[in-house]
Length: 306
Image (cartoon, rainbow, N blue to C red):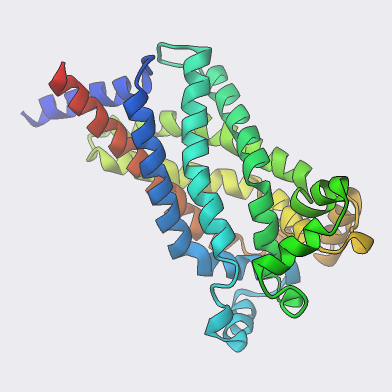
């Protein structure tokens, strides 16, 4: 009996990845649950993210970053939470929804090849970067302690951006640091979606409970992807923390400044990596597990109706 259940679970898992055209209700459910899971994950892991951000900007130890936040007081601990809450909620809908749509366009019937998953993931990352880069930009300014006096709120930052000309609003304001964001998001999504299912399938063959492979796959794959692209994360944080049209270093100058400020040592660029591992494990593990659970429930309901 147990062997039969495990076999049917693997078949169901395979069917959830063999996308069939016309499953509109499944997509709407995926958007909703993805938004909720990303919202909760972002709220729970935001304190970790803020400590990591301080390390990226000031190249300080974990204990020093925590002391700095504690000294500023609890009223500033969740300062900057609203842009990432909104952006991550939108990310939950865009990332999985766009990926599934593109994958269905490339190949309406699965299983899908590595090249198809890579292409769909890459393009979904491009869409994500274009749509969400302004939110990340505002968030990074808000989280920089050096900007609290001049720009105490989201409104003050938006007012500054809107004071620039049209091109300045985009290149110096909302889309400051866009190119490294584009590379980071597109490659990150491509890596995540390319290897998420193979890792999950490999774990599923071990006879584990159906939620464990999804949780572990999302956690491990998300963490590895994040660590591979961590230098770009540091570069983006430093570029987007700058504000004011008269003091905007170029992409190359920003990269050189990050390299020099870290003593030209790759290990110092990865300062904060341990907390990134923790945050990525929780966020991507939870998101992947919930998304997989939703797929199973949707297919089970569809089979009952059929």
